[in-house]
Length: 166
Image 1: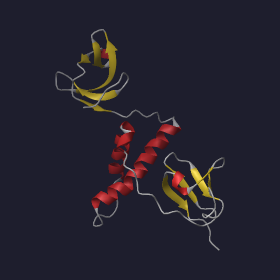
Image 2: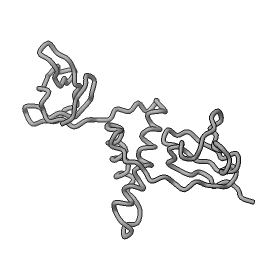
Image 3: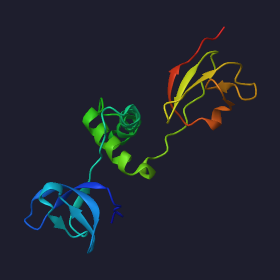
Image 4: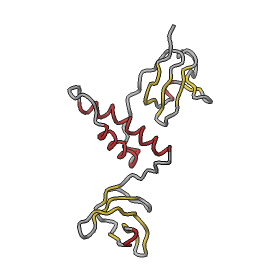
């Protein structure tokens, strides 16, 4: 059972078996699902499916959705097995949207192998890019422009460039 909070948005089945978009809100009698203009309400125990609300003008929200979808692709591919070619972007988008509702459900990805070429570029789960600016054998060879760290300190989701090797 999901714990709903004021302001949560969901598709709620009302007493007439009709689905409506509703907002979980506080009313004099306690928490209810409110349907806005009609001011109709349903009890907080009504059947409800959470919705993700994304402002298309908010680049951070759109990037979070993109990253979640992108991260879902290898996991879906792994679940499908080697016999299936390709991953439906709709499936990946659905998984990404579910993860936006429950970020704690995002499974850990296996750590990618560290690229060793000078100038290698990787991206972490927050969309931050890290560059290998010296030998991987050096202390804290990965830099994001202001901080230097070890490979194990980066939550890498994608290798953008392997860098160059002599």
